[in-house]
Amino acid sequence: MLNFNWNTEMMSPNQHKIADYIQKNTQQVLLSTEQEISDAVKVSNASVSRFWRSVGYKNLKDFKREVGSELKVSPSGKMNNVMSKVDGQELQYHTLKNSVDHLYKTMEQFSHVSFQEAVDLFIHAQKIHIYSPGPSLGLAELLDYRISRYGMDVHLIDKVGSELFEDLMHFTKEDVVVIFGFIRLLPEANVILKHAEHVGYKTIIITDQLVSEFSTQADVVLFASRGELQEFHSMIAPTFIIENLIIAIGMRNKDKNLDKLDQLSQLRKRYSAELPR
Image: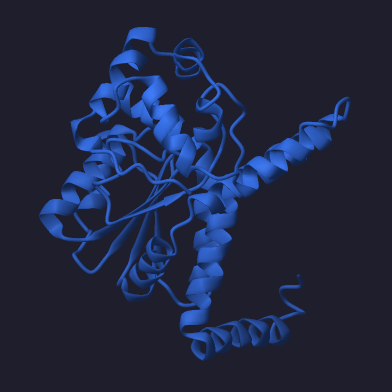
């Protein structure tokens, strides 16, 4: 992974889009023209031209010269090169290729430090609140279902608009809020982040954006690739992150959590006649 360490706080919305695209598709950018980059990001060619100087390069040619020497072929690139040679496959093979690519991109950007920080926050939280709009609801329900078995107190935030305040008033500094922020943050998520500054609770964002205006607002940011804006957005990589969090959390207090699961098995056995599976 090549980390550019750009100052995202000084970027405009269009510059955030360009930077995010470059971070995700660095090798492709090294083979692209400014027009191809602007077409992919859906911004003007002039915006792309101005971008290079704002991040310390003279122009696209200067960027390619400096970055090209640092960048090695990634596992994702190698896998993509092999799979791209297979033509005429059915839909399932195309979907499989995309899924594998998302997983490789996620692992390329995976931060062991950030992941362990997220696990720490889960372990020490008094209560875990999860904000999961739209299609991310299934991810939140999976996380809730699994870690509730460990005895964790989990609350799914289902209120929108001003109704959100009914939940916010109960958040404490001992809590953790998990936010799914794919493509962009909704107004409710922005309010949750702002309110954390007043109350002191910790926040974790799971996102498909590598470079964004909210990347510095949360305590922990975990990346999961889902595809470009114009593509079908896969939940393979976000599910991968969630399942690894579930396992890592369980391993932190292994004996205690296994005991909880044993209690569940005993309950099932004791009342199997009344409540068969």
